[in-house]
Length: 68
Image 1 (tube, rainbow, N blue to C red):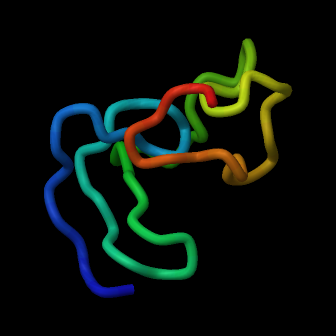
Image 2 (cartoon, helix red, strand yellow):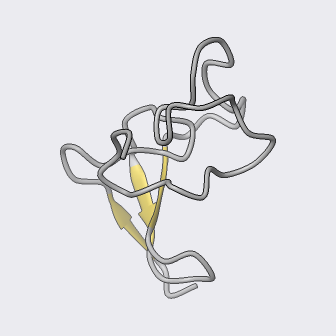
Image 3 (cartoon, rainbow, N blue to C red):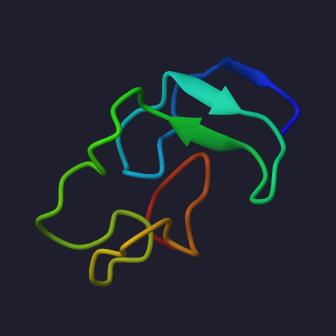
């Protein structure tokens, strides 16, 4: 990991919420964090792939979010 920076508008956490911090680099590249470790809303589809919720990070997660 190469550090962190404040999130910019439109960047999201792995749970789908707006990010407040972005961790730069690392195994998965730049990753947003909302500041809450509760995993986000667990009802409804995954905000990134539209499928069932995942135990961990969605493989389709992107820093700017949205289902692909």
